[in-house]
Image: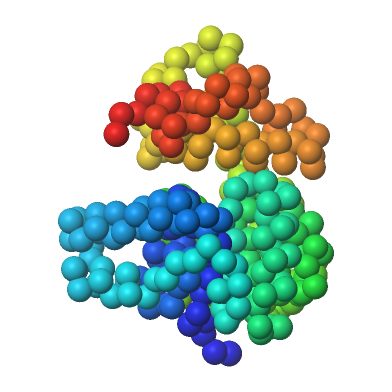
Amino acid sequence: MDPVTRLGVVGCGLMGSGIAEVAARGGLDVRVAEATPDALEAGRRRLTASLDRGVRRGKLSEEQRDECLARLSFTYDLGDLADRQFVIEAVAENRDIKTGVLQSLDKVLEDPAAILATNTSSFPVIDLAVATERPAQVIGMHFFNPVPVQQLVEVIPALTTSQDTVQRTRDLAAQLGKQAIQAPDRSGFVVNALLVPYLLSAVRMVESGAARPDDIDQGMELGCAHPMGPLHLLDLIGLDTAQAVAESMYEEFKEPLYAPPALLRRMVAAGHLGRKSGRGFFTYTG
């Protein structure tokens, strides 16, 4: 089975830019698609800044950075991904947006064996797979933020996914220097099924006045050796993304522990989304 050499990434936000970076660093020819020229330019700057940080920290040489940049190309036309062997969508955690992207890619990809992977963190993959004409080549490939640092990838086959697609996806994860685990095709998969109730419990503690955000996070960092407390982690993930994941899980299971707390909903409505907006459970400057 030939390794993937031509990868497409749709979306160049935090997740998409991270996926594109690790793929370029892994030697792949990477083409990144964004919705508009402005979004594309912002993604290009984000990727370049991340590679520059790698040079400053001694993780990359200047020559390696330049080689990575040479492997990256950018477009705002999905048709430019027609020659890709494998495409990963990393757009907003919205079922309709993801479905539309996969349907469009299904039509433009020239190779009928090309794989479409979704980086969804919550939606059942089968719902996305059956919206295409190639459900056997659709799979979940859930990366974790920040992608260049986190080693895990959840590989999520739908009922329709072929074993060949599963193996090629696991092989790609290895090419990118990631460790793959296979997860069930149910909302939340493995990690979020365990993580989200924990994060929402921390929000409820703040909401009820039981404990302050600083004390909650210090308790979990110092008492349980977590590298980051739950509220700082929510701010890193993005409160809007966390709400979308919780809503998807609650929709599937109808269990109260997955329901987004009122405080989370109100913070999202206010635009207090965490690091990306400068304010969440904590305040960020710069």
